[in-house]
Length: 84
Image (cartoon, rainbow, N blue to C red; front, side, top):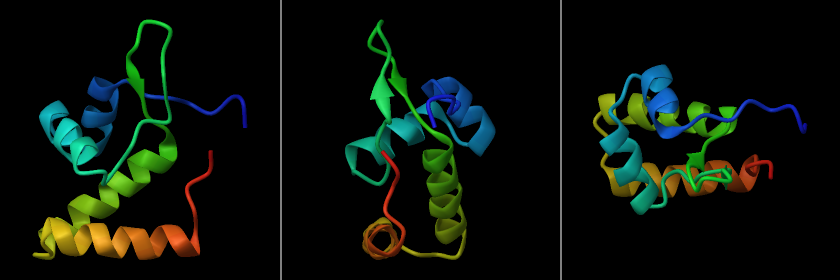
């Protein structure tokens, strides 16, 4: 578990095919959250966050609103909580 890959915002954006601003926005809305901060205060995101981000984008493409997505993700987290 200690060897889990963590991504800076730019790396995560590239992997998820979204902009860094989108990640900032989703973080502000509490749709995703950083796993931790680096020593230089960069937000670091996990593979779990990458999966969550891809799920958000899929739901957006299916025409769900961000409010609906947030409610859905909260239910999803109750079933399979994010690993910390």
